Image (tube, rainbow, N blue to C red; front, side, top):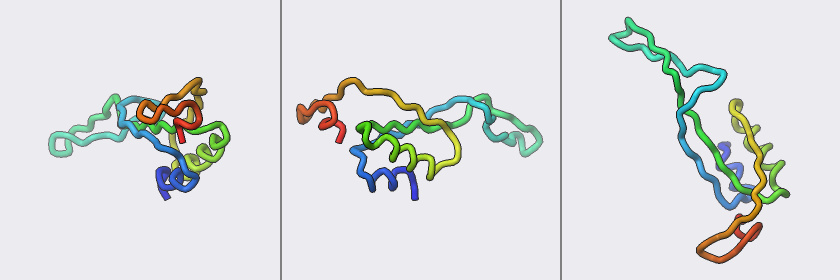
Length: 97
């Protein structure tokens, strides 16, 4: 099961995945160039940022699903002070469901 499929089951209103380039503790894989004679280690590797906004009541469940479906990365939890859905006029928890 993927993270996305797991989050659909609880249900989560939505998520955003963004591809980034960066560096961390583990270097990106080496690239063989010039017909295999040169080896190049890129400074930055591809990373993916997954953003999920959920009510406090679903926080632990979302963390559990993410941890079950990936073995690398980090999870950061931020408070959302207010939320507004421009199209419907809903706010706060009603806007993120």
